[in-house]
Each structure stands twice: as structure tokens, then as C-alpha cells.
Image (tube, rainbow, N blue to C red):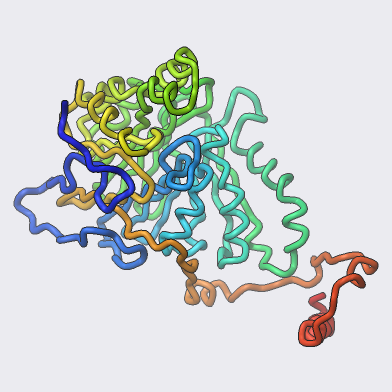
Length: 395
């Protein structure tokens, strides 16, 4: 048996090595044992990667897939938006106006479900610029990111109609950036950040992984995939390689009641077994190999690590929600976020002021039909306020 991991859902990350030293001659920063959200400004050449969701299916203690990368230049990138990931984002003290760059690996619902939730909450919490959503094309037009964004607008039609005019129209804009997933290609290059998308095998054509390079630092989020030589080619010399590692099939039989053949089809032919992930890690030798997309519960991480150790002996992290990794030129440090159960959302008055503040447009407002409005039960101070709004043309 390999080294033992701690039990999940504690203050210790599920890792074989909390600190990986890249430069033994450098003076290393001493990070607090736990990361307190919003408390640590990043150095210019630094990346902070937070696991917003790491499992399947979503449970209270573990959302579906999604990771956030905060960079020292102020940029924030979100890779996949599975169910529960927006809830985790709300704990991280990152204002919504920074959640404007989304990179979707594929369109299984457990990877996209919260995209519309970001769309919703950003409108009322300070986002005054478009959501830019990057994603692959599919075999047919209806299978790409352009169609997905168009359908989100359709799904949100009633929602949007109730809010038009009360909220700034800039918060309702979503831009799709579609690319062909037939080869590795640069899909983003701004502000010193380059993101490369590369095809991965996952069910049908139209799934990708992403590599982010910034200031000599790098990460790969491979998304859902079987182990692939293309992933290996695009993950060379990477600081953090985030690659799915499914639980052994027997766990799904024992805990979820799946049949053995169903468990093996899912864990072995659509996703990546620990022993298969070991082959990817050993051929890329990342600074840290992070496995995600497994069900984390007491007793489940150890078999995953044991399977990885069948063919890889480097630093390993088994991701659970709120695992955070800081990457600098000197070191890679893995911690857990100090969890606050009910934080308020982060706001940024300076950003709002720089955009001229929120600008409602009463001309596009929609309200109740008169007969339904008359059924509301009046409260004097609220009735007075409604009259004031009507006098201003805001009702």
C-alpha cells in the first residue's frame, strides 16, 4: 500500500506532498495553513487554483466539475460550471464582475448546469460587461457553444423579462466564442495569458481540455476524458495537471447500486481509471498531478491513490471541493480553504464607479397586468415607495 491520505472534509488536503519546491535556492513564501477567502493578494507571477466542484453526482459536500484560476494580473478564469460550483464561487470572495471568462470542456450537464446561475447572479451583483463563454463546436451546429448560449437566452426569457430595466442591460450580455476541436489551437491570448484548447476522447466528438500559460507558470484542466496521447503532448512541463480519476468500478456497485458492467463502462470507457491516470502522469511528470471527478467520502480517496501509485510516484492531490493550490516560480503549495458557511457576496464599488455605475432603463421594464397588480396587499410605506417609483417612470 502507498502512503496514507487523511480523511476528507477536514483541514488537510488529500495530498502526498503539501509543498513542492521548484527552486531549492529561492526564499519560499510561508503560506498560512488554511486559505481564508479574499485575504491573500497574489504576487504578479502567481496563480491560485481553486476546486469549486470535483465530483459526480452533486452532493452537499461536493459539487460537480468546475475550477477557478486567479492570476496575479487580476484575471479570473473559470473552467466548467457544474452543478454546485457557483455556490462554491460565492464563498471565495471574488466579485461577480471578474466572472466573465468561462471555458467549457464539453456539454454534459454536470459540467454546464451552473452557467445560467452565473448569468443570473452576475446581473444583480455588479457585472457590467459581457460573459465570454468559450467552447468547442460539435458535429452539428446544435452541439456547439453558440447553440448553448442561444438556448440559455431562451431558457432565461421569462427571467430576463422580469428584470429588464430594473437592472443594467450590460449584465444580460453573453458572448459565445466557438472553435473547432480538431487539433490543439490557441483560443485566448490577452494580458500575458495564453490558453490552448486540445481535443480529448470523451463519448463523441466535441470535448476538449485546456492549458493555461502565464508568466512562466502553467496549468492543464483536461476535463472529462479517457487517457490520451494528445493530453500528454499538451501537458509537458506543466505545473499543475488536473485530470479526472474515477473511483474503482466496485465503489459504484457497492454505494450506488450500479451493475458491474454499467460501472465498468462509465469508469473505464468514458472516463479515466486511477491506473490509467498513472500513465498520463508518468508521461508528463507535472509539478503536481491532481485527480478530480471522483466521489469523495471517508474511505474513497485511498483506493484512488493506490491505483495511481501503480505507475506514478510523483506528488499527487485528490481534489475535494475547496482544495486550493498556489503556483509560483519557487513552489507549488496545496491547502484547503477555511470554510465560512454563510458568507456575503463580494462587492467592488470601485469597479462599479469605473463603469459609470449601474444604469436602469425604465423604457424596457415590464410589469404585472393591472388586474393582478390590484390583488397585492398594501403596506403604507411600500405603497408610498411604489408611487415614488411611478413618478420617476420606474414602474
